[in-house]
Amino acid sequence: MNCNICCEIPRRGGLLPCPSGHLVCEVCFDSLLDKICPECGEAFVNAPGMSKPRSSSMVDKLLDKIVFYCR
Image (cartoon, rainbow, N blue to C red; front, side, top):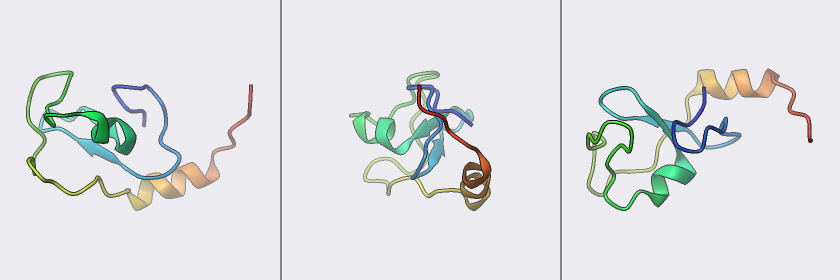
């Protein structure tokens, strides 16, 4: 699963979905000043003052099995 903003697979932290299901990583979420999804314009569910996204244990387990190679 990739972040819809930076298109990266988060290696730590989590992905936070907006109400429409667009995924944003923790780094990009922290950079969103108004906590509005840049894809659809909907506010994230717990905004304002929401906690940081929690990592999904299923995603963490999957990422542990993926081998990342340096370019």
